[in-house]
Image (cartoon, rainbow, N blue to C red; front, side, top):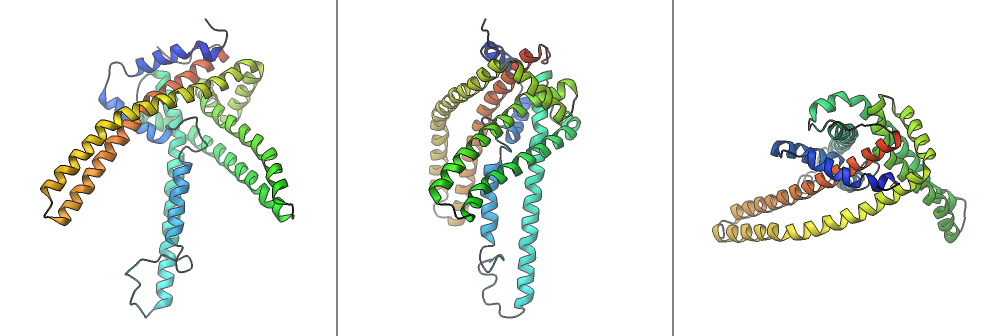
Length: 331
């Protein structure tokens, strides 16, 4: 048996992952796939879907880039000569409504993802896959985690503004780059660790001791400081396991992509043979065939994510148990 918690619990985490899905239930598997839509994704970024959100945000803003920020619908505004002021007001209003709706959906999505973090831990703790009940009972916890993430996000934005401030002061580009790296990089590393420990340990502490986020963070910080060697090994193991699981995921996707692509080619050939003389219907069927292939690919990706993220969650919970000298997982 290893002296380091992170090495000792790997086998146990694998066994926990197996037990969660025994006996296999397709309904429970689909629940976990749904959960991955909210909480899946590597080593726990700040909001997990922030990259997707930023890409969508760019598309939304680009939509209004023409005509001084108003939406330019091709073909609608052409040929219209009267009531220009009313049209501009309407288009600006529609654009504003679109932006407000978009950010409303984004915020709701992020809040749900924060609540789902607690749902995931509760599922791992009880080994009972129940999303709705756990969601209802953890809304308050999710909101507190959302608020914490917002503060981290704002602090990150503040760090990013440092280079602009230095340029504004008239400092040369090369010194600005060097100073920015020396200041921003260490802070970004710290923020990444804070984010990781929040997901891995603080959430578990909140559910284990029924404490709020700040009190739980104080407990976890003391725990990590007292056993700093174990903490360093845990971080290194998390990185190593991330690399290993990344390689395994790539291999699995490469192998599974072959039959998925064959299905796609088969559907394309059938569509072409049947609907050659029906252009519109053929295009519709072609689009539907493509969507089917994409749906299959998405389900495969999320199914792989279910196993990987469940393992990582059990891994961090079992390490937390070692740190705290308790049995958090039931059964």
